[in-house]
Image 1 (tube, rainbow, N blue to C red):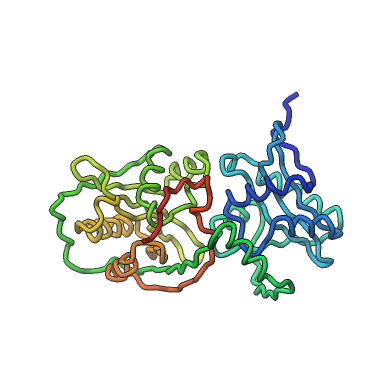
Image 2: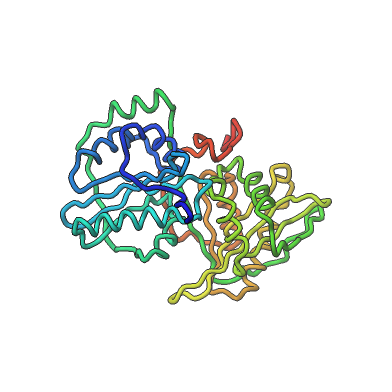
Length: 345
């Protein structure tokens, strides 16, 4: 008989350090949520539980917090060790939480997703969850002055304020052909990129801009993304060396129709400032519109190159909304692997 890969059980006081380490690795921690405080509250509150998953070596590899407020059930702190994501543990933890709530009679389950964690929305949708048009409001009943001082004393500033600009264009901009740079770059389509090659591009281009989400994704999840027929990776080479890249993702919506998203766009550090960016963006947009979408989208944020937003606007994109998020500083996540001194200067 095949043994299970993990065991899910209620958290114990001795798990606190391992839980905090996991939450930091998954970018779930924020300064105002103390692990020991939250775990004690889960233990002392009726109809609430923090569950942990441990592997056969008793290593803590996942968590999910669950509780019922007397009207509905809630799901919190779903986390899976980054190297194990995509292997089914997340689904198992959610199923365990749902079984717990059914057992105590909760008629409905709810969860909240921070704006900085939008990548999990489609994952939850595959589990049968949907967006509930409800405005969430909050008021602190606990004085956080001491908590904030303690966290800054031990870790330093643990968060970043990031403003994200969402842009789109409804037609290919008309204008003269962008001149070929003196470096004479060549475009090369990569129809079946390896995970290692994508990580090389993503990590090198994103080092100074703190691109972190794909750094935490397991190879299986990256491979799944790269193998989709609707995703298209193209690199620009100069003298045979990768100088930049872009990746287009085709998306479909019943109301809008086809959208092509410029999911990734950037230059290798040694090729910034040599006149390559405008030319490469022009090629990316022509490729995007060749797929005959209803619109082309892109987003950028205040961690990107300071000229990125202006370049997109000069290329015909319009800002449709902006959103400021407070995110955990990804440089504090050991699993992200950022070099010392990375990030905007």
